[in-house]
Image 1: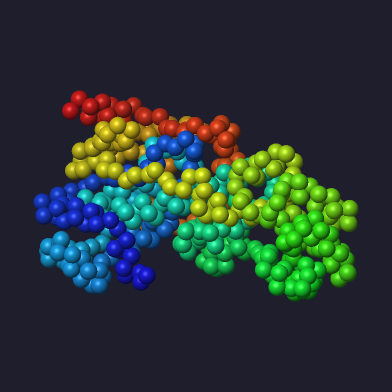
Image 2 (image 1 turned 90 degrees about the vertical axis):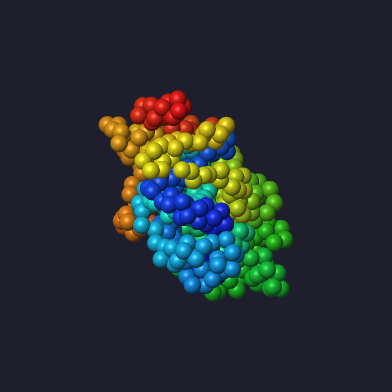
Amino acid sequence: MHDSLKVLMTDLYELTMAQVYFDKGMNEEAVFDFYIRPSSKRAYFIMGGVAELIENIENFRFSRETLVYLDSLDLFSSEFLDYLANFRFCGEVWAVDDGEIVFANEPLVVVKASLVEAQIIETLLINTLQYPIMAATKAARCVSVARDTKLVDFGARRAHGIDSSLKAAKYSYMTGFLGTSNLLAGKMYGINVFGTMAHSFILAHNSEEEAFKDFIHTYPDNAILLVDTFDTLEGVKKAIEVVKKLGLKSFKGIRIDSGDIEILAREARKILDSAGFEDAIILVSGGVDEYMIDEFLTKGAPIDAWGVGTKLTTCDDMPSLDCAYKLAAYANQPKMKWSPHKITLPGLKQVFRKEYDDIVDCAKSEHPGHKKLLKKVMDKGKRCIEEKNLEAMQKECLQRIVALPSHIKGIHTVSPHLPKIGKCLQKMIERLKIK
C-alpha cells in the first residue's frame, strides 16, 4: 500500500462526525484520552508504539487520490473536502514513554487539539498503539520468568502480517530479548539476528550426519544443530560424533523443537556433558511462552535459550487489547461517560507515580515525591522530544521489570493493579454527577 493511502486506514464515522463538526462550527479545543480497560489476564502492561504514533500523526495527510475517493462516496461537502486537502494535525500529544510499565484505567496518551483534528486520528492512534503494547507486555512476561536464560523472537512466520512481525521483534527486544530471527527487523531496528536450521535442511540430506557436517563446515563457530527430526537423543549423539570427527573441541549447541522437552533437555545435557561439551547450549522452541518457560525452569530443566514464536507474535493468551480513546474535555468543559463498566475520567489529567502506586489526578495537581508519567511528545503537530536509542530503552525497561513487585509481576494469579483517583479529579467527578 502506498503511503499516500494510509490516511484512509480509518473508520468512516471519524470523517462523518468530522463533517458534522465542520458544518456546525464545533471545532474548539478537545482533550481525548487513550487508556486500557482492566483485564483478568494482565496486572500490568508495557507501553509501546509511541514512536510510531508520532511519525504517523506527523505524516497524516490527505492526498489528491484519497480526496477523489472520499468525494466519490457522496458523503462529504466540497467545503469539507477542501478543509481536508489542507489538513495538518496542529495540536499537542502527551504520552508515557515506550518501555514504561503502565496500568489499566490511567491515561497513556492524551491528545489536546481542535475537535476535528483530535477526532480524525482516533482509529490511527488505537491501531498504532494496541499491538506494540500487547507484544511488549507478552515479551516482558517471558523476560520476567526467564531467570538467566536467553530469549529470541522466532515468530515472524506466524505473525498476523509483516507489520506485526516487525513490531514483535522490536518490542520484544525492548523488553529484554536477545534478538530476533527476522532479518527485516534486524536491518530496520539494528537488532541482533539469530538462526539455526529447519527440519527441511536435515531431510534434504542423505542423513543427519551429512546435514550436520555440511552446516558446521560453513558455520563452524555458530552451528546450533536441530536434533529432533527423527530421534532426538540419537540426534544429539550424532551431532557430537560429527563435531568430534571434524576435530572441533566445541560447538554452539543444539535445538529441540518437539517431544517431551523437559525430559529430552535433561538427557541431552547429560550426553553433551559426558562427551566434554559442557559449553554447548540447549535451545528450545515450539509452543514456547511464559508459562512453559516458568514451568520448565522451576523444575530445573537445563535449558539455556528459548525461541519464542507463535505465542509471542499472536499474543496467544490475550490476542486483543480492550483499549479506548475517549473525549475527556471540550471547549474547556470536562466530559464524562457514565455507561456501566465503561465510565471514563473527565478533564485534562496527569499520572503520578511513586513505587508503582499510581495516582490519576488533574494535570494541575501537585503530588510531591511522585514522578509524572505523561510527557509532551508533540507540540503544534511536531515531535518535540528526541527518539530514544533502542538499546537504552531496553536497559531501562529491564530495570523496571526487575524492580516490579512480585504481586504485580506474577504470571499465574492475575489481579489488575489499578491507579487511585486524586482529590482534584474526584471533586470534578462529583460535580459532574450532580449535573
